[in-house]
Image (cartoon, rainbow, N blue to C red; front, side, top):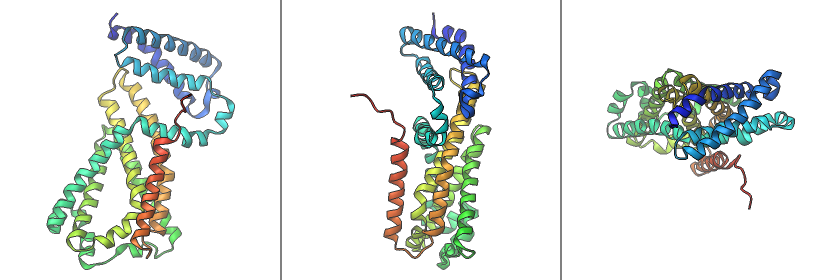
Length: 322
């Protein structure tokens, strides 16, 4: 039997199993009817058998990887205990979110490149000639003018009180993250636009600051919160790109099934980012515009970055028996 024939014959049961597992995302096994529970058990056993066949007959085919993931997910659902549902929030942030980040990191990296490359272009253009930078990204004209005049506009962030400014910053950051995420449903084009636009904006502003000798002032404001804030934008952008890619290249499953899987992962990423954006908003409101020395703000940036990526890369890993 060819792998394609095996996939065609078995795919309906795999998609049925995926649909039942999707039902358990919020309510666990309690979200399923008695008939659904029986069907879940049957489909789980079938998928396990299919995995064994695939490993034996098509060891190098990607269907093995797909079935590995499906069976592992089903196993976790079938054998979950009630205590796990009571610790849902802890489980999400301790395991689900960091594991999802690691499983989808290529999309996050792609989002980083879609931000960084325009930022680099904007920086080079504006550093050589601020007017050229403004021509490349006209929306930065007012900020570039402030830089030219030496105006530190961020000092007015807390004019109405730090609590209100923190809430405003959090709201704006969350809005940008949601836009980057939601754009994925339209093949990722709006997501790319948000990433490129924000990258150009930062690059042009940074380049103009370098040209006018304003860099220490600018980075004195951006340094503290930039690490967490930009990381979240990359994660949210990667979630959006994942949605678009699932439509363009669904792989072994139908586009609907691929989009369902991508949407679930993307939603996990977005939900996990919200507390991080709140942290970034607090730093931006209370530390970034403060008169604290640049070295201390850089220390905040490095500490927050190390803590964030240690969490994302290490949390939720299963210890191997010795």
